Length: 255
Image (cartoon, rainbow, N blue to C red):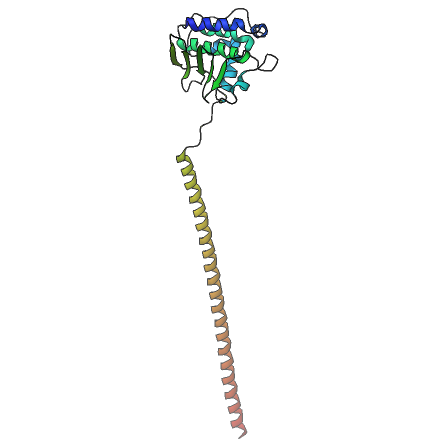
């Protein structure tokens, strides 16, 4: 446990405005004794819920927006300053974990930096850090699919520095959604292209089939027409020959 860091943050908290130190609404008078483990932040419950919500929302904000995101005045919805003492105690009292110790230091200094001049609040897009001239503490909260981490670095002569990880059972509603993989995109493109080709080929085949059918029909109609015309010519020729024979026969009788 970083006794030195707790002393520093305790002094800073005592220097904070009285309104900031007022207890959060609806907080139980007794702080639960929660053992170190993946569910510790969740089991601290209403002691830490408002602070955890701000951490999850603002840790990826980046330097330009993190202070505005995290530093919420007590008069606005989502304010969390009044919960700081109970949450810090629930996380770090009777804890042997450097992770929860560094996390509680981050939360304590974050409040002090938000409410007093001279404190820093920063984010590299993956974590939230708070510091002053003597130390900086950072925390990144993640769901249980990966490690959360917390660090503490002293700028004093002792140069104390820690960087620890811990798997927490948290729900992270701000977790970035994974981008579609290149192979999935390629597969989709191939499928669409194949489908389009098949459709185009099918259309061409159908058009060709229709053209062939039309051609066959026209050829058949032409053949039928020629057959009819040939039959008509045959009948006409036969009729003319018969007429000639009749006329010759009739002429012979007259003679």
